[in-house]
Length: 103
Image (cartoon, rainbow, N blue to C red; front, side, top):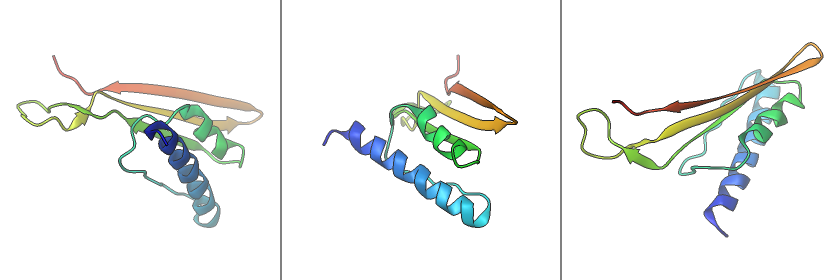
């Protein structure tokens, strides 16, 4: 199975797990390691909204950038996340693309 398909499965399962945990304790955070791009990020956020919760998910790119004065590449080129929540009868969705470069 290609890597992208594994990432999509892992992101879906992670959001399901976060929703289940948040139902029992009120808040949850689940992290998937060694996974870069995972498909349509907004889909996973909306999974939480459908259950009456605030949803947020993000991903990072593979390491391609060295920190300032660094030698080893350890940062991804950008961090991307999507969030969604209900405000009364309306739904609010947003996104951010944060670049970790200098200069």
